[in-house]
Length: 86
Length: 233
Image 1 (cartoon, rainbow over the protein chains, first blue to last red):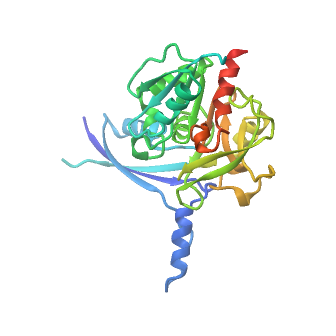
Image 2 (spheres, chains in turn purple, brown):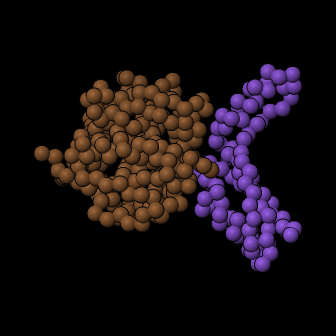
Image 3 (tube, rainbow over the protein chains, first blue to last red):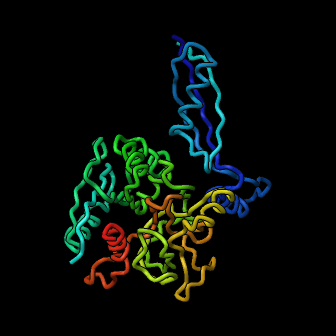
């Protein structure tokens, strides 16, 4: 059965205040280059899934996100699937 | 003499308030109480379960999320459906929201700081967990958390208001719920809520730390007494 490498990106939804992102932005305002804004801090989780095909793999990842990896009250997610090279 | 009911205190790796709860229930209130370990799959002969505070599973991923996958957590859902009483304190509250037994979730405190201090709470006495308080009574209970900033979407908040599910709110000593006294950024100054059927409560303040005269504060005791009172009627 093929193995797939997953890169899962989790971000706070726009209506959730992200004090970490705000703190980063405020600290950069004091630096010499204040051109960047809109910082949001999320997390990235990588793992491997064995599945018969890519479509099945996608279903498994979604299920894992809903069960544990993501709290959809406050977070949204996206992921990329790569064929794992042996 | 006070009626005796059967309590249980859950215990996860990283829980650290389970002994305080057990002590208050058995030594101060003279109730029957047992510990239930996280990988147990049986809850029997129990009226009220306390999910204590602490840092279950090191707060990995999100606070309470790993504990919500444990064997006992799944049994907790059934216990709730059968109408059993559940009190989630601090990390216990976080676990109950991850289990979807309570609405919303707890975010990092707005200040990003761990806050440990006494706070004033305004009480709504319309629940089995608060029936011995006066309505709108102001009590003092300590908080100790880094993730106590209650968040839910607008629809959920409106439903909670309509169902009278907000039991404890951060308040000033006059009962005013203003943003200046909100310690963590919680929506509507929320400190404690119930589920829709009002048999499950989650709260960030620690009533077990305000239940003995030796600590100079017994405002938390009435919460546990309210549950006992509920089963006495």
